[in-house]
Image (cartoon, rainbow, N blue to C red; front, side, top):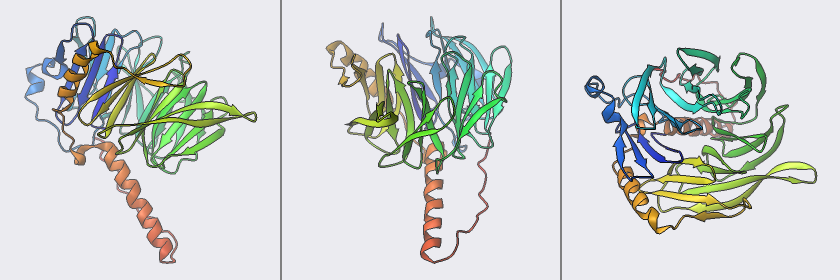
Amino acid sequence: MTFCMAVSEKSVVVSSIDVDKCFVYSLDSGNVKNLTESLGEAYKNIPINNRDLQKACAAFSADGKLFAYNPNKGKLLSIWNTTDWTLVENKTLAKHATNIVFTPKTNVIIVGDKKGDVYAFEELPVRILGHSSMILDISISDNEKYIVTCDNDEKVRVSHYPNGKNIVHYMMGHEAYVSGICLLNNFILSGSGDSTLRLWDFDNGDLLDKLTLQTAIQSVIEIEDLAAIQLYNSKEINFIKTEKKENKWCIKNLKTIQFENNVLDLAAYGNQLWILTGNSVHKYTIDASNEIILKIEDAEMSHTFETLSNLVKSFVCLENTNLMIFLYNKMIDKQKRIEQNMNNGTPPVLHHTKRLKTA
């Protein structure tokens, strides 16, 4: 994604890699600040990067006191104090970031990158684990004992944290890149370019259930006891939950919401789900029964939605730099080659895949 959204109790952030903007909207005051403009003159003088494949990443700490995102120029991790939105520090990354999360208790920043490495950023960056291909999503268990990662090579992995080299198990079965994961009701839920959601047993890595949707999955977000599923190049959001049937846990497709424009990103805080679309921002909440998704129609929020929507309209998408578009197109090309070989009655040909530039 070249766009992303992050939400805390007091702020909503919408960010774009392509135009190098990161807007913070205060839910209290209604004020807007572009963080990228506060990175200094030296940063402003660097040309915008419109060549490398990138993915916009942003996250708040659990207590909402810190915020981190990746600007467009250079391999940077920009960290902010949200009390007054002052810059804490810009840290240098080894490779472009593909995911940023905070540990839920200790506020350590965890960054996955295009090389497949995951770093913990405290005083100094520490490499805690590595995959053979780029990291696409990261989740940390609430007790901070485990880190779950997924990658471009169809794998989901559970490792100990912070000793990530100590692998608990791999979960194999997806047939394309694993674009999103979340820890849902003590299970692991993964979504992939192969259009499937898979539910895994956290303790032993066994596959419990599989649900096929209509297209590739872009992201998976936990919200209360549900998960919101963003589809690739789609105007829809699917909501799913876990349920037990005949002594087996499975995935239930609960509800689908459709928008006028493509969904660009999702962000959750508490029981609130914020949705970034092509020209607007929407907010939903989950009711106490975790069954009904209610759109917020509060008149006081009209200014918030209008302001955020106007900010989003200033964003542009350069497909040649969008990492997720590249991965999707690469998957489709591979499927076409396999289908062509099968129609010709010839065995599949092993192609030497050109590696992604990992700058």
